[in-house]
Structure formats: structure tokens, C-alpha cells
Length: 198
Image: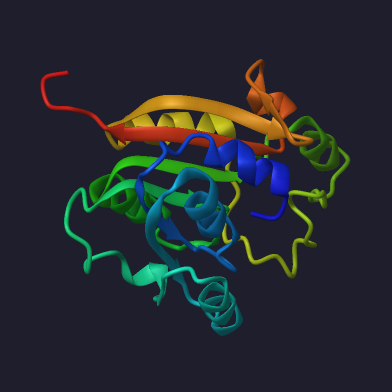
């Protein structure tokens, strides 16, 4: 999470007092915020040494782990909320990690750059890959393995038996609920596993 206002909007989706697992927690800023403002507890998962150190200095519980290896060390439903913010596009096993998010948490929350945002579309129409605040890298040095859209995630969620509880876009620090696939640079989804017989 790079933008503080975006982080706060997503934090509002986490019920106060939740036990949280933050996948790709970065420097622990969001977990620290959830602890201090929403009285949440939990852990971050992070691979980068500098970020692990930053989490520790912030007093955030962190486990150094490569998400590509999965979440086998956690039982089903061990957390109230599993966050996967700005990480899906960096993973080779995106779909598997989405299923793991739904398995380990009662609720999953994901966010990712929405490639269908209108400025991105204009870049592509002009024959170039977009470089924006949300997608700040050139095509040849981006850490993103894949790009996706708000609409793509809705299809994937249905395919994988996930029930979307809430969804919106974020643009300029504001929630976008009207045409988020076109009007928002960031897509946000809150979901749970489909209940049998529902």
C-alpha cells in the first residue's frame, strides 16, 4: 500500500478486533494502523529483509516467507481477515493464493492495479504500455508478473467459488462505485468462500 488514504479506505473493511493475516505486508504500516486504530491483532507475511526489519521496528508480528510457497503452515479459518493488497499481480500462483486466502481467512480482502482504468486504455490504444501512479514501472522493469482488471476479478471469483461481499474502486483517495472498471486505478474486493447449499 503506497497511498495513506487508500490504506485507510481498505482498513475500514476490517472489522474492529479482528485477527488479521497480511500477505505481502511491506513495512507493516497497515498492520500497525489496524492494531492502533481498530484494535486488531495478527501477523504479516513478507519476504524482503528490509521490510521484515521495518515491521519488527514498528512492533508488527512478521513471518519471513515466500508467498509462492503457499500458506500450508496455517489451519483453515485461522484468521478473521486475510489481506492480499497489491500482491496478486506479483505472484506466479495467483489463483492458488486466492484460494489459500479464502481457506485461511473467514474473509479475504484483495486490492490490485486495475489495468482497465481509462488512462491505461488510452496508453494501450496509443500503442504503449501505461505508466501511471498505480502502475509506475516501464514494461521492461515492472515487478508485476501479470495485469488484471476489476471485471476480470469478478469472473475469477465466481470461477473459484468466492462470494463477493463488497467491491469498489479507489481513485485519488476516494471510493469509486460507479463504473469502477473504467474509472478507478485500484480495484478492491472483500469476499468469503461460498457456503455449501447457499
